[in-house]
Image (cartoon, rainbow, N blue to C red):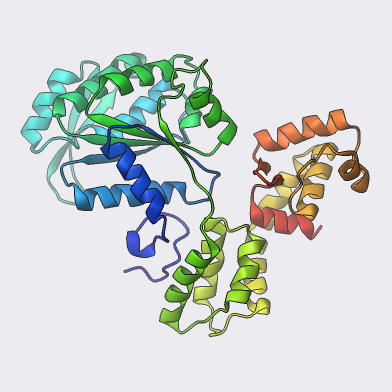
Length: 372
């Protein structure tokens, strides 16, 4: 049983997932109609939760479709990719242990099979060890395995832009080949670094050029999340006015994770009416727990980088950080040095470029910076 309905991490079902009905339907329709999809959003907008919600919806509608989620954030090579994909997929498309053993022994030419007990069920299960020196061959084996299963499969590759960092430079081309060749599998290519994802799917220099439908995830609508929040809070007899919620929503720019983090703590408090003093205290408690990390991140910066970051935090959002007015107002140095600082802060995800301007990526970090 979920004690607190405002989940900060993980997915526990549609009951604890706010809205995204239109996006869920759009993604499902793209996959159902044989299209691959590119899903782009900044971190903490709820991208991963949306993927899991889509897959939950598909499982309820079509139990013959197999859905797999693979997080590539911690991968650094083709071998890492193969290990992650293999762990997610292999053995999940078969009905009996004997069938698994038979198919695996025929399909996976560069792997080692061992048997080990399943701690949850006590039943034996096989474990497949992929040999790093044969990563490219094993990738082919995995897609052959998917194809031979005959089942319709949807695979979400989260933080897909990470493949650009791999030491091997042919991974995009390999995956594009298998995406075209394996007709019973369709992909969600999800990523949080907008400029890299745009380059991968919009530039003719890249193998995935204009090969997918695209969905850019925006923040949840204020009225939609307010309805969700008040319904959950009411179960503990807690109320919050639309006016006070609006202040919170604006403070964190409507970004899902920050709203969830604040509401998670408000749900725990003993006050039945949420006032401005109460929610400001809660945000202060959240920031206090992160303060040492914020200090460390801030002190890693050069003087120019720190000055620019602080200036953006104080402004809230900056449309033209290279303008003379902005530079003079915040006593920043030459445009060329600030341009270098700006690029570094974007690359390292201190700042994020929205359609309205530049903002501090971590909204709580931005609040802390304003207090300096």
